[in-house]
Image (cartoon, rainbow, N blue to C red; front, side):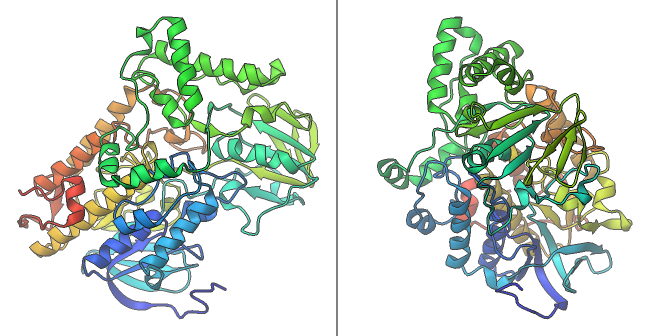
Amino acid sequence: MNRRDGNRQPETDTAFDVIVIGSGFGGMYMLHRLRSLGMSARVYEVADDVGGTWYWNRYPGARCDIESMQYSYSFSEGLEQEWSWSEKYASQPEILDYARHVADRFDLRRDIRFQTRVTTASFDERDDRWVVETDRGDRVTGRYLVSAVGCLSAANLPAFAGMQDCQVPILHTGRWPHEGFDFTGLRVGVIGTGSSAIQSIPVIARDAEAVVVFQRTPNYAVPARNAPMNPDYERGIKANYADFRALARTRMPAFLFQYDKRSALELSPPERERHYEDYWRRGGLGFLGAFSDLLLNQESNDSIAEFVRGKIRSVVKDPEVAQLLSPDNVFGCKRLCVDSGYYDTFNLPHVDLVDVSETPIQYFTETGLVVADQRYDFDVIVCATGFAAMTGSLDRIRITGRKGMTLKDKWRSGPRTYLGLMSAGFPNFFTVTGPGSPSVLANMMPAIEQHVDWIAHCFTRLDDAGARTIEPLAVSENAWIGHVNEVANESLRSTCSSWYVGANIPGRPRVFMPYIGGFPAYLDRCNAETETSYAGFAIDGDTALAPPRVYPWTTRWNLATPT
């Protein structure tokens, strides 16, 4: 039983100002901010500790693809200065330690109920309150409901025929055993070649007797160039952290990297090749910043795609395997993967690659699986099959708004939000980094902090005015969805089947879910709402809002602009 909650008694008929779902980085910061406003809050978390995605994703090699000095909270100068990262790109254990440190430092756990899953949340139109129920028998109410369930938290485990009869362990990278798993001397099957597979396969192959990777679609990967943290680099950033963060917020993805404003077509082929080599040596997601038009111009994109395919061919010795590992789609239309030795792993004699793009996995057996009538036997199978991204965790909660409408029904043809923050018909319900916001296309830490601060600021404005409810106008929501789709269609990112459009889940509508217009443009749109006293929202009829109060944290986002 949970070491923190034990056999706790359910809470019934308890009233809070705010109920928060999830205690990852979004939920933790939301709780901290609510406390600073003097608001009562209860957080529900299905895990037995904080950390969110970094609690669950414990697979071998799990690591952040944003540099450690940028993938961290900025709300507390003391926290910034006291915490030190050991590597350029932090590993999952270190990020989880960081989350636990934050929870300890700000005494967050006393308001979190762990090992508790929210099952239903219903808006009571008579009392203008949310009624929340959990699988532990809790039944509480809150004036506001905030979802901080995360964008990549609902593991996708495909229902292969015969899977229930398989006798060997089946692991999912997004729900990894907390005690770890020893692959020494084992025959391992890995399904999928997305980010978690690209990170884990080299580590698994070090100890396994044999590894067979089943690939449906190859992914581009660039070298991480990870290294121990440079103390001088760390000291330099900490000496002026606020300005460093502020500059990062002016960039499209809200993190800093070397960015070239030129078009790839401005350089001659030899010059362009040398330019790509320079960025390849640097490694990381910044490789996409080699030129400004890589996701806007097909010819420019073709040049970088062919460069990377050339790198794959130069590393992988077997030409047929190299060809299978070489994507033929737009470079960057799927989440760019950052690797450490992924392509080299396929040169090992005990690692094989099986293409299942045209001949899919037929069924599981008691000891493995069958592809193209060929039987593969394993000691363990790893499903690196990703997540029901953006909306999966919300789909698993019955959330009911006005007139009995459920969120799942409203979003049946794709998620509908205004700014990724709220959805019409669901008053006082907020989503942190929800669909329609930059979320997964940005550094999640500033994306989270900006959302939480916007939401908290909204609470103060409503409280000062005595307003009871807020929700988007349908016209605002429709216009925002149109804008999200419009900017997505301008980018080559919308051209392929990726989890950005839900293509990894059978039956999901193909809708580009995150906002691709960039963090600065998005921030301007959010600030426009506060500056016009939320003109795009309906607020308890025609309640007039007073000028905003000024808090230190509002100035980071220009949230304190007088009306």
